[in-house]
Structures are given as C-alpha cells and as structure tokens.
Image (cartoon, rainbow, N blue to C red; front, side):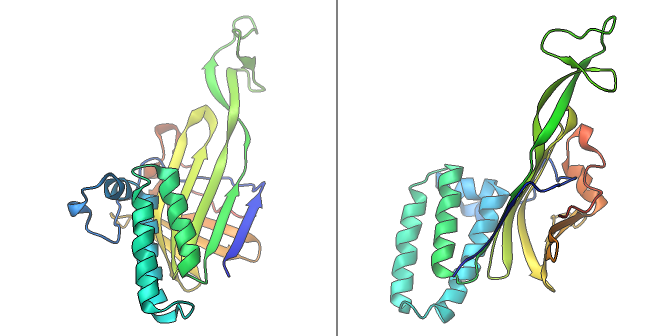
Length: 235
C-alpha cells in the first residue's frame, strides 16, 4: 500500500531557486515529437516523474505478482494512451503519473508540505509619515504592500527515486524554484544539477523533513533572493 506523509504549517525558512534543472526523461528528448513528449521534456518535475515511472515499471515486471507480465504490458500501453490524451496540460500529466505509480509500485511515498506567511513589496518612502493609498507604513518605516508568501515542497518517491518541486515566494516578491529528480543514497535523497555545483539533500528524519542545499543553489534564485538557500529547513 502507498505510504503518505503530509504536513501543513511548516516553518520553512528557506527556499530553492528560480530557473530549472536540465530534464532527462526516460525516453530520448531529442526525438520528442508529440505535445505530451515535448511537455515532459520541458518540465523538470514531469521529466523526473517519467524516469521514476520507468524504474517502477521495470521493477514491477519482476515483483508485480498481482498481474501477469502480459496484463502489465497491456495496462501500461493503455495508461500511455490515457496519458497522451492530456496533451501538454501539466496537472493532467502529473496526476496521470501519480495514479499510475500507485498502481504499479507498492512503496510510493508522498510528501506535501507548505506554509503561508505575510510578505511585502517595497512601494517607496513615506511623505511626512504618510504612505500612498493601497500601501501601509511598515514597522521599519517604508511604504509596502502586503501579500501571502511562503515555501512549499512536494515530492513523490518510488523505486528509490524522487520527483520533486520546491518553491518559495519571499519579501519583495523574490522567487526561488527548483524541480527535478533526486536519487536515494544511504537513506536520503540527493539532487545534483547538470553543472554538479548545486546539490540538495532531502531527508526524512525524526523531526520531519529536512532540506539542505549547497550555497551554489543560490544561483537558481531571483536577484533579490541571494543567500535564501543557505539554511537547513526542518520542523
């Protein structure tokens, strides 16, 4: 049976990156022709899900004793047809992969965590202590507009591999976003970008989820987000 791990209200203090890691689906993206294949190759999370599916399906050929090999092949072909009907719709494609992975793998782990908090955009300096309409005077003496920011992480792991998406919106609307594939090594998942400089460690510990990026991952954040990835996030 699939395992589920969900938690809301995480005090995530950091976040990861604007930009995206290079994709590497289970098929040759240089030969992608359909809108579904192109969408998978262009999105790091979908590309990672496709790789996870490839591994899970190969393992299912050995361990899926609830159906014959022919039944497994037939059901996979039927699923591919269903997936392709999604076209390039991200939500449809992701949901299709998640549902299929739950069917063919008995060790699916879901992680879905997030926290909202008030953040702001700098709108200028007050004039005679008064801010323009639509803004408020902050505690530090600047005119700001407020919005909901915060971090979120979601991941799906099967067959020793995790497809994940890690996002953050902070002060002055700076944004960090990192998606891709992390492989399980010694009880934790490791992501490394193509340049082998940014690495992210994802660990399920006694206190929950721990995310530990290297300083080089700051390169993925927006201009105002420098230094946003230098902390360990846990709860």
